[in-house]
Image (cartoon, rainbow, N blue to C red; front, top):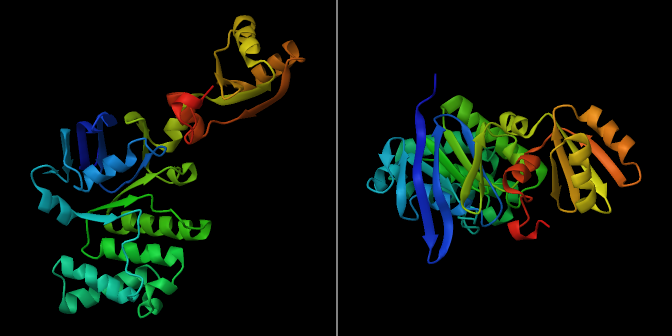
Amino acid sequence: MNRPRAVEIRGVSHRYDQRRALADVSLEIQQGEIFVFLGPNGGGKTTLFRLLSTLLPVQTGTIHVLGLDASRQLLAVRAALGVVFQSPSVDPKLTVAENVRCQAVLYGLRGRELRRRETELLAQLGLAERSRERVERLSGGLRRRVELAKGMLHRPRVLLLDEPSTGLDPAARGDLWQYLGHLRDEFGVTVILTSHLLEEAERADRIAILSEGQLVAVDTPPALRASVGGDLITIQCRQPGELGPQIQRQLGLAVQQFDGQLRVETPDGTRWLASIMEQFPGQVDSITLGKPTLEDVFIHRTGHRLWQPADQTR
């Protein structure tokens, strides 16, 4: 049985003057899942984040958060959301506790209830012993935890994070994801992130891949990888424009030329790797066999790498 929807996006498009940022995006995010919008810079992630957080008005289509209309029920939507922006929102000259208390004023929290929530959050995030320390003295990972404490102080049911791993080392990134999993598992919080990091997206329950404002795929990481095929053969050669059609004619394989390489998606890579080497030994410089990754999924769906503009794929 499907879980209730935390977010429902229907036919959303957005433009900045003549530039299209989103084109007819529709998807659903279930309550209590970690969901990642994955895509390159300029792919539409930040625009969608701003629409979900009500920082931008919806131009075309509808967005509902926990059943609330993001166009007509702004205050109710904002009360249900916790938001952690990519750009720092902490005051470095204030202590950890002072930053949290400043956030509390925005939500009318005070007195005993504020003290209780502050104590719980700082303990959960490993900040209790640093509560009286100025934020400017903290590492990037600890500062991000302060951002999370501010975003979770009012106990939102949906937490939005824009590129939350920016500037974090691998250890701090791991700590962040451990806490996000804790929020999902212990409190049922729906966590929605934007990211351009493939290894980060692998940790999500589901992923939406965005490219040039279009939604090109939505599914779990294993299902997305399985959609590419069982195995992926990558061929380095001097003349891909000649070798690719030859392989297609003689072996009947679908070959994709990409970034100066040839790519073959097949359920039986071992068999075809040997056949390619036997029939085209002088034309192949190197050949590798592997399982598809999320980058392969992105290439398969868009024709270019995550970090590479579409007009630079040849």
